[in-house]
Image (cartoon, rainbow, N blue to C red; front, side, top):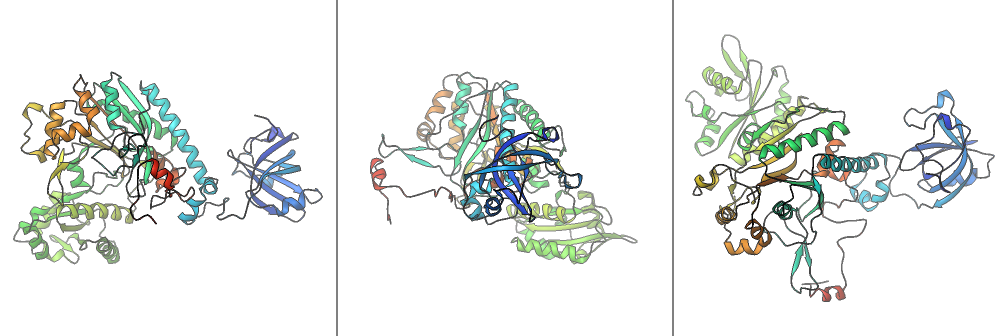
Length: 595
């Protein structure tokens, strides 16, 4: 492209352009004043070109004073750099442009944060001036990566035979999941739309409509608190659904897509080309979490039975076990030579997490097996041999132990597994380890009310022969629900859907919903399923989290163009904001205690 602003972009000029007259436009990224010579790094979306102006030039004095991030147009000639000044860090590093004249296209006030540096800066400043933050090299490249990943995924989905459709943004409120964002209806006073938490019902209706494979890069809206891997307010997911499929058919599609995407955009190796399938039950036992990081080789073992032995005198744990607690342990290989401080620091860290600490001992053997460490004396040779048999521990290995009620125990052992692995440098950061978590329970008990509720997706198909399911034991019912996890990050949940209306009424009744409520809340869905619905299933991997992994970022904010802060506020656009009384009146809304 050539016009009055540029003949080339700032990443385009090479040695074969030497001698050419060129026009470049961009931002003043950096200046270096060498007295008789001024160097200006000119930056645009594509890269940087070094420009020089000599003191004799009439523009020198003005350029010398110019504020960084001013937008300028320069006209000049491409010249060779001397061998010792070649910059191999940039693609235009073998040349520079001698400025003949320049023009300011956009002035710049004093900067609230530096643009030419990727140094850490306060979140409040970064988000208030996000348009400046996005100019910085790392985050600028992250957003470009995001665009390329989305385009690639869209192209791959087309190749896999999926059709892209858009589902409504204004819809009805759902009683499940996180809080809805509500939108008042002017034409229907007192009634509200909801922004979709996901296109869940619509994508199922697309299958009922006779389309076979659907996808979209869907915006989703949830009024929930922010986390490092979750934006408050809105996020994007690759939403897909397929008709006449079983669980394995969904897995085949998603594995192909993720393998192609991650190998195309990263040099890291995939630990598994066929993603392992781990049951929810096994995952909670072995990893303490249903989001396991399989780069970590440490496994958690349940050794509660050992504490029923008479030759174990660890009374604190024994009493807790008698009152319903469990004991789980983590074995670290060949850690006999680690200093006492290593073990004590892990114990101290566990207490900081709110646990009672982590007991530990190291297995030794002179004439017979024994244990060294603060609690080693409480275990007999025979009890240690039983632990070794259950866990695969060897002489020279160490054992960390925790005892608590199941939920608390899973939490601390999961955190400890990660902490210990990082302390021992066991995690290969140059790999991606994907896995499926399968066989989720259909229902769970609410810890506060003790009522039965859906554990995951209420629209899932239960496993087994429908005619033989024992509905009187709902906590034993497993569902065709699954999560895809990578490096300890949950990318998505999915399920084979329940397409049988009678079965849906039955399952919802277990969770306390009457037929009337179902008919009111899921009118479109339950009605559609009554007119010939195919078996169908799908999943919705999070775009933000995929890009976060590919960009090697720990916070989703770093791959989101205009994120909100932790309080769900857009500091740049001042949202949410007050609205006028006139607007409220049109919507038939009055505010309580309006200031």
